[in-house]
View 1 (cartoon, rainbow, N blue to C red):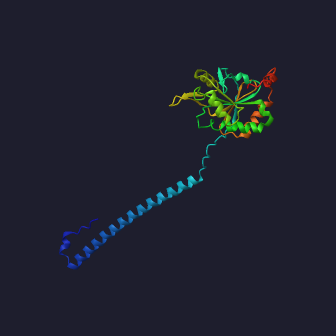
View 2 (cartoon, one colour; view 1 turned 45 degrees about the vertical axis):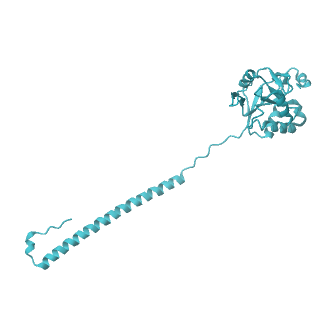
View 3 (cartoon, rainbow, N blue to C red; view 1 turned 180 degrees about the vertical axis):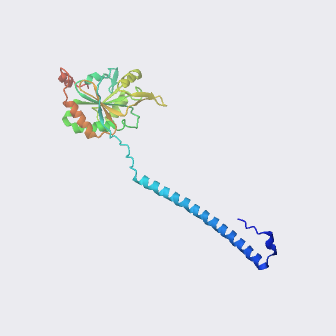
Length: 256
C-alpha cells in the first residue's frame, strides 16, 4: 500500500509534512499488521479443519463394525459321499509275504501312507494314535486292522517296517510295494507322490484313511482330529451293516 503525497505539499510547513509522513507510515504498518493477522487466521482455519477431519475420521473408524476374523474349521473326519474300493495291487507285508487290501474284508481298516524316515505328520503321529485307538476300543479292536503303508519299497522294506512297527505294537500291519504299484494305489486314495532330493518316494497324504468292512474308502480323517473322535467314528462304522454275505469267514481267518 502506497500513500502518494502531492508535489505542492512540499511547500507546506515542516510540521504538516511530518504529520502527513507519519500518517503514511501508520497506514502502511496497519496494512502489514492486517496481512499478518489474515495469514495467521487462514493458517488457523486450515489447522482447525484438518483437526476436525481427523476427529471425524477417527470417530467413523471407531463406530464402524469390525470385521470378524475368518472362522477356522476344526480338523474332522470327512465321510466320502461315493466311496470307492481301492485296487488290489501286489504288495508285501512286514514279514515279506504277499499281501493285498482285499484280505482285510470283513474288518474295519485304519491306514496311512508314509515313510519310516519321515518326521512330519501323519508319519510321527499315526502310530501313537493307532495305539491309543486300539486301547480305547478294547475287545472291539480285534475287528480293526491298523496299517502303515511304506511308500518307498527300498527305504520302507519289509524288514525295516517290521522293526519300526515293533516299537509301537507288533500286531500293526506294514505294507509296501514297487513304485509303479504304489503310485497306482496312491492315486486311488487321492494321494500325490513325488521323489525328494535323495530319490525317496514320498507320499503327500495328510490323512488317516478308514476302509469299511466291504473294503470301501469311507473316511478321510484329517490331521489333528482327537483320538476320542476317531474312536467314535470307528465304532459307528463297526455298527453299520456289513454288506457281506459271510463276514464271519473273514473274521475267522485273520490276515496275519
